[in-house]
Image (tube, rainbow, N blue to C red; front, side):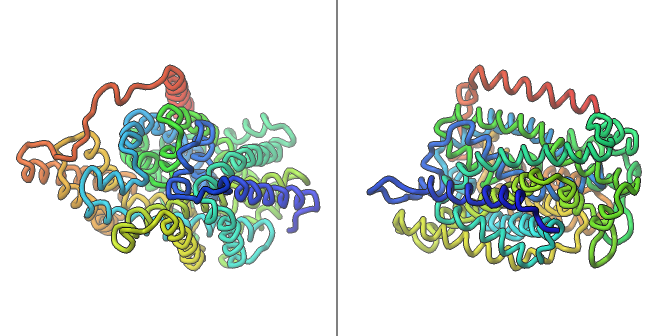
Length: 547
């Protein structure tokens, strides 16, 4: 399929706008040389609306548009728990962790670990994060983005991967976080408008031209896909190999509310460099917290954009409404209907003009996340590895140069590895599971580091070192244990070890680098409190409605 001239014009216009804006905001005033604060923290000048927009643009990528729609096709609305729980998680991070980070004046998450523990903990976690960003995050977003290009425009996967990487590199490597964050403000507008357009057309198709009838038919045709809390054996989903497996393994009942889901959410939103970096670049703590509230409201909206279209695609396939649609859903190699092809296939249904807008939205989601991940990868390598071991006396200019080279290398490695993900049915679940190997250790180290003064550096090092091995052992020993529950078990084991080691080693004394906690540190503005109350109330209502 080829885009019509109008669609192509809309898409090209979007590309030129983003690249032009990225290069424009990257320019420095005459006589000013870009330093590390400019490149890695956007000169610490982002207002709340830019912080919130950049958080969402960085977070919503191909893994949501393609991956979460695919999971909506397979699992239904239950996958929305990642979005709705995230809205609540943002409140926790804004209240309890952001004040600590901004008070410390850190650039990176490993930098916080150096301040609280020691260089061993910082280096260990920096290496883990670099591997995760390059081999899981960048790789999966490149793969899913190329999959959409392949499905929509029949662009070969290799060319799609190269093209998306090149697009993201054009402005992000030169401009750093400032270029990424300010273009994200534009990207999130395309992302939401284009996403809503796709949802509207999908519901129209299901409802015979009536959107509300379409929504009603979704609940009537696939009622099981509107259950938020899944029981064991309640839903069987494709395993990508022609067989089936229990959806409970992905979303194990109440654990999504009171168990391991909190670990993965807090690890992502609270201790993840390419997310927290936006808040660290805010003008002030108040601006950062308001940005988190803004992002929380947008997260509540996301299931309408990325999950409902996947459920609509399932109804279209089940009812045989469009044989061409069903053929497009099939993997060209295996001939099996592939969940992750749901969203790209839906884009083909859009009318001229809207198709270009929706395609621009999808590309915006992909490119903004790629740029954010690459920038954060370069920040961690430069500030926590290079300046520590290779360039202790490196100038500001040299640090910026190293950051740019690091981002380029990260893109190249991810582009080489990305095609290997083609065998997956739900790439979104792949990302969640393998990120979950490191999440329990990350959560334990930061949680105890902030809230328990007795936590020692050796205890933190054990938590960092054992997170992946324990996860692997439990995965092999208990293959039927849902990965969300596995994260909870690993966290409890690590927490116990860290408490015991700290008490034995520290002999009950506070660690010299412990953090002083007081009520003043966690004081928030009235506007923040109102926003937090609304988000908490809406989230609770959504779970009650779709229980």
